Length: 206
Image (cartoon, rainbow, N blue to C red; front, side, top):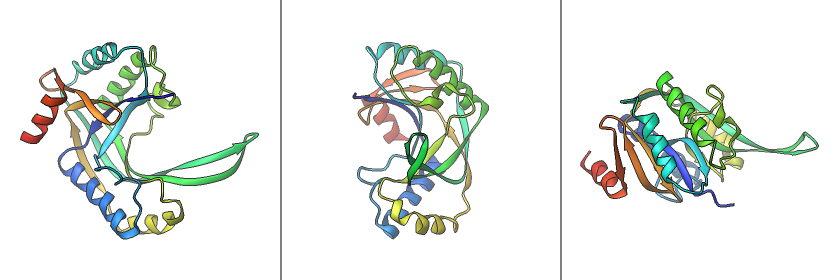
């Protein structure tokens, strides 16, 4: 079933530059293409992918929850990975490390915002990620390598040990995507909903 929608925050400033540098460093050094098949956009997924009968309620809920925040701080602190496991009768028969990511340490405000929004959206969307409903188990992450990394994982992981990654970032917008393209952004400081044209125009000015 097609789940076209996704809600995320996009990294800006130093956090964005750092993440893009790592993505391209890994691509050039190890020739893995998973994260650069399209133009890399450093981001942290907050909810989805999902489908729903109508998007108006989603937009309303993003604005309602977002109206209580002016900014959402976070920190980046080191690396981790996801491992895809195949099971048969509850026994793991195969595993593959398929994503390397930067660990995002959310502020309490970011955790509260995401959890409050997820509780609303889970009532009428078909999101299947089991951790959406948990305030503390949800994995905040920014992907830097994915898909075709399994056979080169050990080399990439050893290479990343040379990086000491620790920085702070700030989110001012909540981004709603449809099939990978911005539909709307909710601007936290101004409490305004921006359409795609307004959103992209303001990013260029920044």
